[in-house]
Length: 630
Image (cartoon, rainbow, N blue to C red; front, side):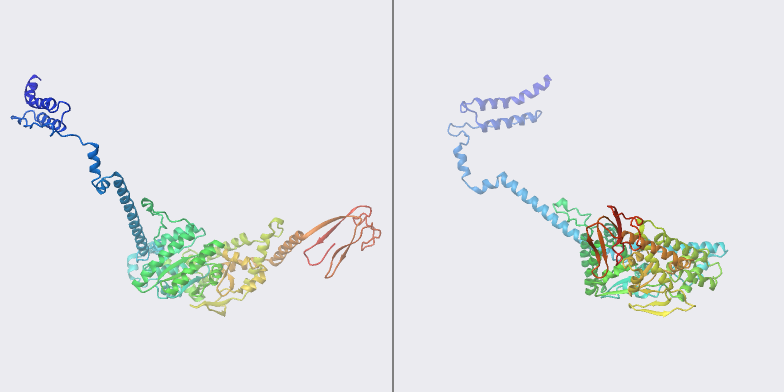
């Protein structure tokens, strides 16, 4: 420590002497000069920072300052003079200007970033929607892509292995590739619609459940790899339909919007209708671009629109979609296709339809159904012998030409047993929905009115003459009498005749919704299927069915009459006269006591329940039967 002090102290001595000189010089006796003090401090720092320097620098020669040359502090007057030198230098160095510039730059960056994000988001939305119509992946096709074909191939392979055959050799030799489902003759028209060759129109494909409407559309989309086509499933809940619509178009309805980071307001929430309208606006831009590039319109399919609620909300949604279908088909940029099982969507769309075309899908004709059932049976069980013609005819007689029913019985082990089971199941379904109850309770009268009216119509349909019906690409239906060799087609009654038979026109839509009857665009009312017709015949052919139906209708009439009847209790002495005719009614004849026996039998009033001395008489009046009764 002592050695350190010896080394440092000689080196710091000149600085200390210089500082003493600056403080106690004759010039600065009153106040040390600021310049001298700063110079001294700098010199001391240089000495202290390098204590081991071999040759410290000599102390600077500070000239003597005269009394007039000593620096003095700026006086207030000199400061005011410098400020008066210019406004701009003082303003540019103001903190207020710095804060204002910082705020403006921040706002500009936020606004510019928000605008850039908005333009980028709009571009991404349209780009993603264009990808939804690009060939390749489609959600609807992924669910149905070759799943049934895979099952049939695996089943066929197992059956060939059990039969002792080589599946690979059989598959290689089998050059005739048959599809695993029935191909309808309307498939060619549907292919042209989906591929964009039928432009300038939009289509409503109508037909009973299970006739192959959706299958034809999916097959057409698969043939072109969904290039320019999208498939949307309807749903009773419009919020669920909104999500399905967005999934088909690859559109998120601004749910991935992050504009709040740039102080951009979120889109206004207005329910599913507003979101669907936004999606349609974006789709219109995409359709315009696609048509310019490809030279053909897009195809947008709405499947099962009868699932929309049959109320004001569902009707508004149908009209919203129909307005776009009319405008886009007129412009040739998009072809909309609607499919339905029920009749009420056709009634709603028909009001404002000018470019709508209707494709009615019916059951297959008898010969086509036999051939399709035989091919499906051979494809499902290749190791078995071909089925007998009599068995095929009996099966087709029970289930008709419905493609879904033919596929079901073709894959069953015993076709006849499966067909009979389907008829029994349909019979029990009918009894659960419109079964007759003879001694029905008063509270369930409305249910029996519905059931009795339904059976009146079903009895008329079962007795109707069967016709040979074949649909064409137009809306015309060719009707020919059926023969014994072709008994598979259904009879019908007209819509107006059905209303007269039922006496309640509002019940028709309920039966149609339950898939008990089907109504086509020609207003022909038929049983929904041959299975339904066989179930109806098995019920109405029972003993005393007509008497049973009449007893239920009488019970309903009695309950209604009881509901229209009112009992009036009148205190005597009143004499009431009932008058028949146009001006008929009841009139009080007198207010005195009843002296004469006014009964028709001429007997005593006491025997008739009346008392002339202040009793009461009950008069039952039927006010709704068209006349009067006491």
